[in-house]
Amino acid sequence: QVRLVESGGGSVQAGGSLRLSCAVSGYTDSSYCMGWFRQAPGKEREWVALLGGGGTRYYADSVKGRFIISRDNTWSTLYLQMNSLKPEDTAVYYCTARVGFCSTTPTANKYWGQGTQVTVSS
Image (cartoon, rainbow, N blue to C red; front, side, top):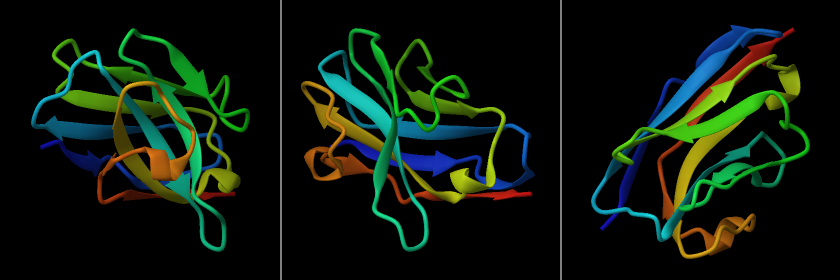
């Protein structure tokens, strides 16, 4: 029912910024929590940021203060504004959606995009 397609990934120098977008197809509403996860080579998939249907935002400690999760007014696009990027932010970033409460556990999030590569060079 829900389809997610990420875009906006690329290469950037440390300290730079990048904005990821997630195009949302199908039906989503305030009952959905949407978010971003990432997976670096040799690392476990981890949560980055979550946006609850009520507007509550959650950030992993590693990105807090640097990243901002947001959506447009129609919920057709989810964004991740990434500032002050660090080499450790290099990963494939995934857009996610889950019905109900937000969850930081990857397997609890039912819908996933295909991912977009972000590479940060020092």
